[in-house]
Image (cartoon, rainbow, N blue to C red):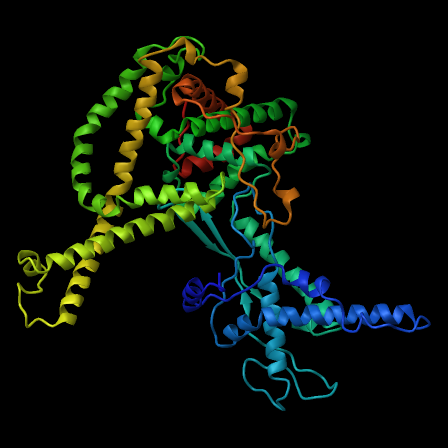
Length: 562
């Protein structure tokens, strides 16, 4: 990205530091050691040759590392803060699958940078004291004041526009506490030992501050449990999001030997029920909170649902129809108020999804979200440019120029003032429309989701068709959540692979089913919802989970079926 003159200039101006992935691979293996290509005396010691090659390779590796972190050391020396993403890439997995050592190497190289920078001074009185003079005299202890602060960033829904973000800061790790062992013995080996210790602490803190589950199905089951207990995941307090999620993970992350056979079977049934409901919602393109707003949960509503393979009754539509009609007047008023900002953002609603569809690989949640944001921004930017061009022409027409305060046909008005006035008017106009859009977009989007969900319910229950019936085998294909896309930058792929409750590698056994009309899944979806709610309620009411139930209730959770 830095090689491109445009993106490179943008990144450099924002303070970004260029790095290359896995620099040590090239440093130790790709280039031969110095002098290794020259012929040598066969009678010479092979151990000496091996030692020389190893020393040369180690020096080359250290030199490559020093060059890589030269910019970070300079930034730290200037008192700046360097942010490093330790996982090395963005991915969607059940847990943290890799923590790269770049942050620790940057800290270690900075400590060496301070020591070497101050090595020539006879006396050092400042904070960056790196040691005494030449020779092998006693070295003064390095004091850099450098610390590594682990930061956990958790998106509640990274694929959604305006997702909530939980940010937590861990305990600082002071590099000066490792100075004693960092400068003893072989520099390269000492650095590796310190880096490993530091990153062990970083990884431990990151795991404690994020949501981590044994497999992908558990993550889906936890997401579904949150939605059922709170009605909408947005109602889960953001400050408690990670702890709530991790406590729900612990329901399913219990070794079989620590629980009775009946309880273990109950946990498996709960997980199966929640993941099935999650999967059916995914393939039907419906959210639990939207379905809940149209068809609220109650004991009677659960019992009144007809069997999934029978012809459904249109009576199921009575409650959703009434709910939609009562909300229609307010929705129309809100839509009318939404028209002005919608005109500005309208192109972005097409260019964003189009960019994600064309450029993001299937299943890559982060890439799709990024391309949506970039594509949508370009669409809105093009619309603003078009508006700016129109206003520039309208500037000569009279009324609009007076409205903008630019004068009406005044030839004495300087050209620069005309430009600044026009750009300023557009800027503040866009700023108002953006805030206006942000104020109303969620409510209008929710109303749109309700209409789409109602249409799917109407198609399934108002005009039942025998051809829409699915066999058990056909439904099973849509009863397992899709797995996240593989990431080529994840080294520990064996840890990222998801396994089901029987230990089967789901990344190979599970294939995405073919697309299906949502109406064919609706009856099965409602039954899955009923089973998931009953199973979750029954499990939380057991004596073993009284503490968990009390904690969840204190955070606003409600048992779906009493």
